[in-house]
Length: 324
Ligand code: BT5
Image 1 (cartoon, rainbow, N blue to C red):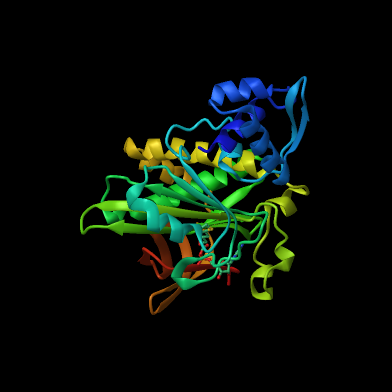
Image 2: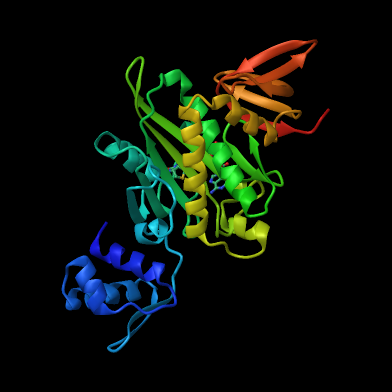
């Protein structure tokens, strides 16, 4: 954490109450002039800080940026988000995460205000303007690569539960889209680095349309997407959302490591928008039509294609259709 982040953390903890420059200087072992310089930078970043020689520094308003200092102030996790790498703009948080995964601790997150080359699955594009939440979590679970899809499902559950915590009915479309009223508000891209039989690292990229105007998206994506702002009718605190999400994620990840995947899967099933739907699946070179009747213990989708004939789909694209 930089000195600036530490100052911010202290001001946020004391929001509405002044903190003296002298106290900050002595607690952080720097000069009062250094404190003053960092405060100036924070003001330039949009923090409303009153300063007076007698009283000290008083934080009145934060700009809801996703800086480490903001997120860490009040964050209740032990592992997820202990280390946060922040970018105002980057190509893709997943690219950075993969580059640094080997040299950082588990739970490190990369977060950006916007991405210039956000990535979806199978080389697809992910639109990532300012106002959204674009983050990647680096994990190092001691599991075989075949179990990696479990973590994608876990991530979907963590996002859907966080959104539900804000009073919005979020559901999950197999395997990894979070929907509100049938429209996509979040996508998840999991990438792994692995040996034959053990995972070295796993990057869970989560993109959430928080305070973005999906009306500005390219026409082909517009009708199928929505944002938290649109659904709630007002902007949300992205900082609060990220804190809740990291806490939810850590709770589920801890369960997962205690062999608690069956419970997570149960939650996934309860929030599924896909089970019971007529679907079109494209997987590798195949297209399958049928009724999605469930997911198996690894999260593979089970589709009844007719006359009791079942297909199991481990990975692929899923489109919800009208019942014929
Ligand atoms: C996904 O892919 O849904 C995974 C998206 C993961 C994004 C995060 S952001 C942080 C991290 N860094 C990255 O670079 N990526 C991850 P997929 O299932 O392939 O869905 C992609 C499709 O979703 C596109 O083809 C569009 O139809 C649609 N789409 C693109 N941008 C969208 C957005 N912002 N909101 C809703 N839908 C979008």
